Length: 246
Image (cartoon, rainbow, N blue to C red; front, side, top):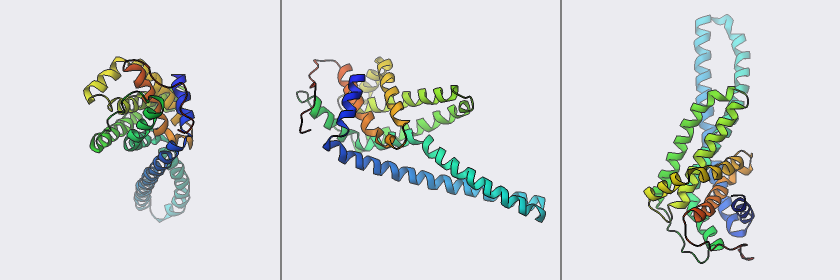
């Protein structure tokens, strides 16, 4: 797994990956901006409605304290939006990965496994469905894990483990479905669930690094291409090092 991670990191700076990196980062930033705007509108509406209700119930004398409270809430809302965007980063990168998984996977396959047949690209509908399902599932699990974040240390571990499970599952299936049916890819993931989870730990560690985590779709997909090649069976025909012009 460490060898696969090192290969992935070395290839991420190669020219073919740079174009995909720019596109995936741009799409991720677009989604994050939409989420930030939505959270801002939602929280602003909630605080505005709450302030009006309190002022109506308490009378004009409450206006001054409510203004001060409003400023404090505005600061809290700003921090909350930032935290929300960071919190949703794994879900966003999983969605972005569904749009670029085939382009990334094909690049890895051609460079490191030139003697093997290239996988069949997923249909846009299948890839998009995979990404949306994983993102929604991620949000659901994170909402369930959020109360545990109040427990110092323990909550962070639960969040990290949940992220590793979700992203390992997502990226492995995207890589495997290029060579197998959906049913076969999921069966292969279940058979090697521990190995896939370990790969997910590497991806979870990567997505926890601010700014760099925008490249998670590249890292996660490329890593799981190597993992799938090792688990799917057959002779190992990967190159020790990629060609110099890759």
